[in-house]
Image (tube, rainbow, N blue to C red; front, side, top):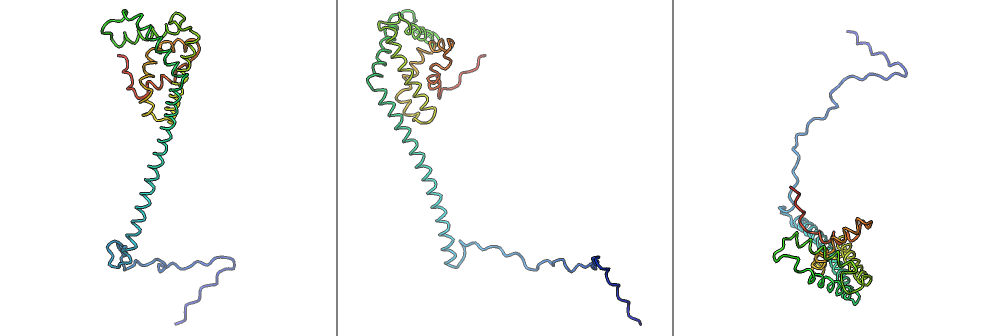
Length: 228
């Protein structure tokens, strides 16, 4: 029998077509994937030592990080306390003591003057209106024995200080807890008298007059219930 003729040679410059075959596909491995051993249950003491030392290093890093965060926050709070105490020292200087005394004496005289206009058991609204009227009159020439120009200087000094306190607390430069302990009652009382006067000043053109004081006084208070 004559041998089969050989295939013709590929034309020059033309890629030869290869015969199809399945021999290139990999055969599935007959070995299962070996599970990684748990180093904490290994019988080799070197693997145990390596595993436990690695765990201890990780725990030490986590503890160091948490302690660093705690120390940072504690230092920040300490700085806030120091800043607040600097304001306390300023509040106790002679100029501010005189301003507090002038304000106290003027309001006490007006309270005594109009005491009979307030009922024995006033409602919160009645007391609020009464105080604000006293505050407005205190800022007039007839509001007390001290000349209005002198009293206004004292009043402006108090407003400046309370504004500064509010900026310090709101900007988290002062400790709110320490600030509240020293100044909150005074600020709330001051605002109860002079909120009406502040509103008049804003309507007259000073749109931000004593606004930081109002912000500080309302800080932490529950929101007012909506009108029904």
